[in-house]
Image 1 (cartoon, rainbow, N blue to C red):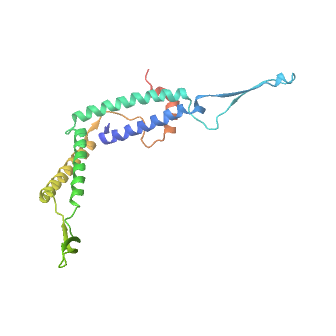
Image 2 (cartoon, one colour; image 1 turned 45 degrees about the vertical axis):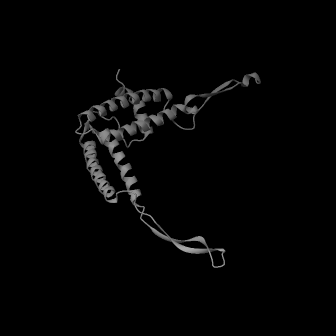
Image 3 (cartoon, rainbow, N blue to C red; image 1 turned 120 degrees about the vertical axis):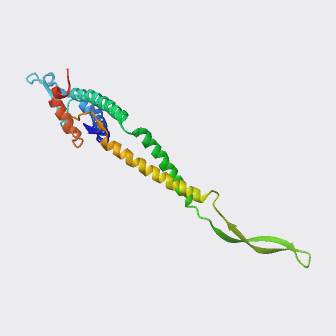
Length: 214
């Protein structure tokens, strides 16, 4: 049995194994063998032809075994995914809905926080206008311009909403964390998530009967 949190971690582990396995069978060197036929007899009747299979520079698991491993991974991913769905249905809260709701809350919190960063300001500058002087000519004169800004919303209400959102978000996060730890999934992992791909696929190839049920 795994907790829901451990199950999601194991899902990621299976995803990583699948990526490595698919990368392995896509490798040209893993997919083709190279054979050299040295036709010496054509030029020298006393010589014998030689057929040499060129060995790969690095060891790897053959594609047939890796494809079997890929098929097994598909079955394991399906099995684990169904087990996770069933455990979620039995959980005290709807984990997926709660996570999505909290994402929206966090987005709203961030937007309100950024809105509250804008502070009212008062700035002074100079303006210019014209008037007729004693000689009847237009002459410029300068005056002070005060430019002020203020909140175009209910600041107290916004702060109150922000506090409520934060409180609700934290409370739901605690419920989600509790659900992830205490909700158990009926699934037995075959490998440890810390095992590297090379070790896992080598173990699978060496002991197929342990993993593939006829």
